[in-house]
Length: 114
Image 1 (spheres, rainbow, N blue to C red):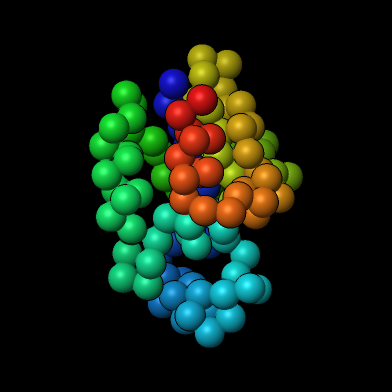
Image 2: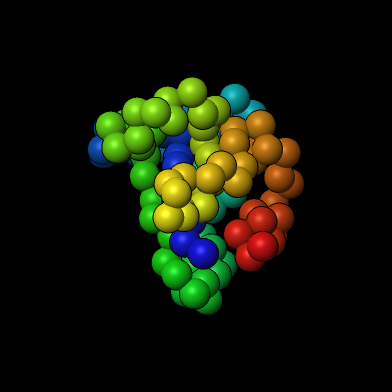
C-alpha cells in the first residue's frame, strides 16, 4: 500500500533553513517529529533512505503548504501525518500526536511496514 507522509513544515529553502535552525537550537519545541525522526541537519538519515528503498511502493512526501493546496478537505488534520492512499482517497494512519509519541526511527519504520 502506498503512503503519503506530510511534514509539519512549509516547502522552500527559507523554511528549510529556519527548520534546521529550530531543530538545532530548540529541539524540544520543534513541531515536526516526522522531520526530527527522519532527517539530520544535513538531510535524510542514511537508515531512513535505505528503509525507503525496501518498501514495495515509494511513499509520496508533501510539506504542509503543498498538502493544504492538494487536499483542502484534510486541513483539520494535526500535522505531521501519515496517510495510506487508497482508491477511496486518503486514510489517516497517524497524526501529529501519534507521531510525537514515537521514540525513534525504528518505531516509525515499523508503523509503515504494517
